[in-house]
Length: 130
Image 1 (tube, helix red, strand yellow):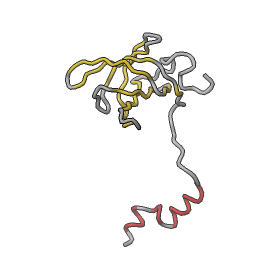
Image 2: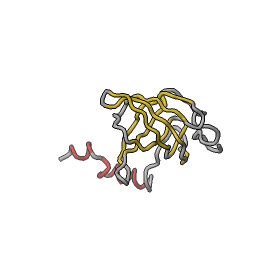
Image 3: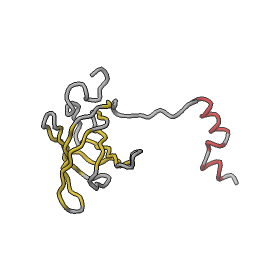
């Protein structure tokens, strides 16, 4: 009987106290600001042991990566090469997460393997004020 209180304190006195002190939804802690922008990109990688290339557009970007819709089958943590088609700059990235969009399409959260705030170009670096 006492185990439930220790495993799930949010239902006990301590949980009520925390909720009372912090009303509203939890704030997300992100490393960088996301900017909603549609930029043409080319992805290169391997799917089912075969090389693939796919042209798509970003949904949002930050100094650490971006979110893109994908038709190719990729896996979480898979390494890809991302090309910004406006600047022809290439950068290695990894698939940080995969989510299914409202339309049933697959969205891939891409994370740069090295910090590159200027990859997206002026005004889309993910920093406030740009």
